[in-house]
Image (cartoon, rainbow, N blue to C red; front, side, top):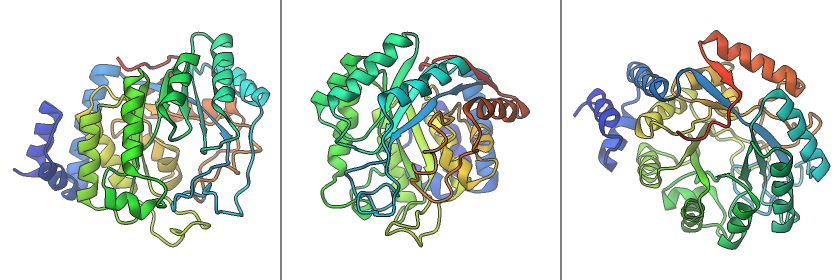
Length: 346
């Protein structure tokens, strides 16, 4: 079966086997990617129209206990600029975001033990008390089931935990020994069982990645059926073991966005900051490949440069209001409308 036929099968059945996934990924070409994007946008338009959902990203701590080889916030990076936002600062970010029309706040940070379950739960409860109509998303890494349950009971709606790779050998290439793929995948299953809208995802072009490892990622997503999928290109950071590795491909990232849309038609699919960093029109190209979410940064402007997962991270320097205005204009230029909506999976 040729690649175009595999695209048609994926669109019709939303599933492929391992060999088919590997063949479809390996066959990537400009012509195939263009057809995949056309099909993905048609599927997304049928479900969501031309709506783009915005999430207010608040990067509240740059401390992390982990030492992942690709991440600029890894604990052994002595040059990383560390900070923690206070509860008052975080709530101020939410206030600004609410006035601008944000109805989802994403609290993202390293795995920082200073932010205990009690502190996270108190923060979630206060955000939900002030803005009962909003959705709160957490992206704070691997926790025990008791922690996830506490966050859910406090009112957290969504949880993002990118699995990064579903291949154990590849996982070992990217992470130190104390971390395990089996635990990360178990966390994702727990999050789903607890009723979170759950997000997974992976880097494109990370060291050691092949069409075969990407096929395993797609099979994992196919089985998990997440509500959200975050895909962005691998981008090196100068203070990590992968400093001299080549960045991932923007074109391949966009192609995989299209394939995810065809596999999971209703998924919430961001055009990520990493894609916008790699390509000057990355967010727009992501949208034209089937994405339907963007995540402007609501963090205080003086800490945005400190949350440096990879080099040259995109941040406009604009205040939040100006950033949203530019975003609305750039999306309107390609025929999309940024909406004030929680954007729950339909």
